[in-house]
Length: 75
Image (cartoon, rainbow, N blue to C red):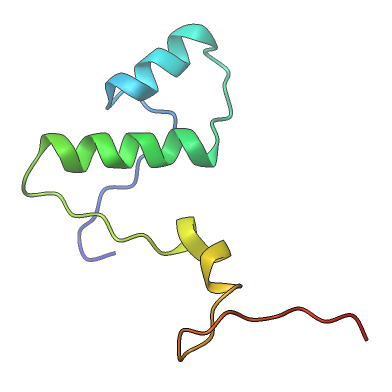
């Protein structure tokens, strides 16, 4: 989309991904590994940007539009 290159994680693109693949070449990866790779890319290249969307969806479950916590109630 918009000319982006999509690379699956873990990848040989980052030191983090290479370390994971060195330890287990068949690693399926994880959310933690992909976040670490994304942060590494953004940290090392000022032209990169990171938008946390799906990686922080759990935070939205506890918030409302006006910023008050949502209270879960069993009914």
